[in-house]
Image (cartoon, rainbow, N blue to C red; front, side, top):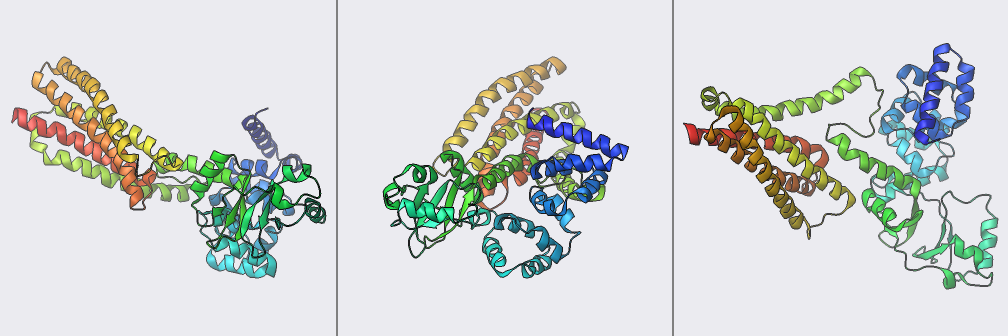
Length: 449
């Protein structure tokens, strides 16, 4: 059974059990699920069912479940806990996961949680918190196994056997100097098949470049994708090993990167709670709707400036929305492509000019096709050659403008440190609408008045 079918079946059974008031059945059902499965059910449940689920959850499982939830829901649940309870809930969590949870709390509460922890755990979490959450340092886990290159394989194996368990996702052992300088990795597969008398330096790999602690998270994800890594070492500016990043954290980055452009284009956040309260959801969306109203007013101002033309040539009101809409769609195609390419790291200063030129050429070909179609439609409707020419030329102008704007705008926004997905959509539609209206009205004024 596929995972989505599994989750859907559990959600349906859960809702039926909650509806019948069979809490014992719900509790037994929840116990059979992994933490990620419980988190999925919580995110998929309305507030009433969600509250019952959380109350039925075993106390010692809350920490594992809460780290799998989206940030919005994490914040809602953690708001019900005091600092001591959060510290207890976080017992056993990896430092990077705990750091993610603390970042959802008010700074004062987060500080109280840190004070409630023992010294060793507090230092480990503070190390992760000292780095931006969207960098390698914010993703890394400081649990690492290190050896010296002069050690023998037999000594390393004896050292590993002294541990009750090794950190999860451990596929390599890190080789460092006495000053903790990163030297290379010793893959477990090499360790297990090597002669016990062999030295680490003879089987270690030195062709692995460690990830700088300040590298952006999206760039880290690209490296994992390109090299099929399970884990990777992280070093500070001095080249000292400070931690490692594992694939489970990178998957979260990849998922967020995939969701972010789509959600941002609608003014939403990928961490928003699907079943958030009405007032909270309405407040968030109201801001975006207000911004769109303001930008729509700018496009309408173009029509207002040519009100005399519209009054005399009323049928322009039929053609203008078609021209503007075609420009918006064409621009959105280019914008989406460029935003995606930026997220994947495909665009650089060396190839951005080629991409813009390619999009202009594509728009030129499509412009010739659809400008001709638009002219024929206008001719069929109104039997007016001048009007058909106006519609065709305006369509060509708007499609070319849309391609230029869609390709150049996200590159410009990235350069000035604005989110291309969030700000690009609003600016694109405002510009394409305004240019489309302006082209039609100016051409009409020239040909008719």
